[in-house]
Image (cartoon, rainbow, N blue to C red; front, top):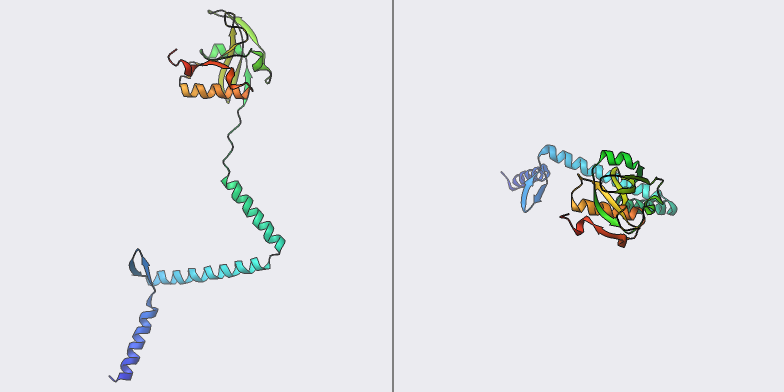
Amino acid sequence: MTSEKKNASEKKNGTRRAVKSPSRSRKGKSFKLKPNALVYWQKHKSDQTERLGTLAKIIASLSKEEVKHASELLKRHSQNSEQQPEPRPLTIQAIPLENALRKWDFIPHAVIARPLEAFTRHRKSRITSGHDALDEYSGVAFAINGAPFAVMHYKGHPPETSTIYFPRNLDTVAEITELVDRIVARFELPADSIIWQRKDNPEL
């Protein structure tokens, strides 16, 4: 074989090797794309280039006002996506005290330095009077997000105070404390109006 033919043959073989498939590296290891993967890769690259070209044309055709408006929309969308969802507002519903006392076995969990009227000021409810094995009482009942509670004042209790009662099955101190705090806040009472609550004496 002459040197010219040999060079032509090597050049031909080299060209074939060059168009076979591009090498890629991943973590220092080289590999070659298979023929089908090569076709997909070339088509994907071509489609991506075409899309970028189309996007560039669209952006170039926009006016300054349109670009500014689009920028504001993107900024607003970004801010909205970063905002945390607001907690569901607490709903308070007055329920008849007599029905609540018949349905649930209530246990005292907090004493508030406010009369019963402080709990009826912002909610349409009726103070009910009665008596049981302990003494004569007056009180009201509510449900906060569906959880029932009663606010009562017994004849023998200190004047200008009210006691918050929850059903007996609510026995977790952390839950009781959180619910007391929610009730006090919902009825717009100061935090220092709580003169005793379950967490002060969990053993009682």
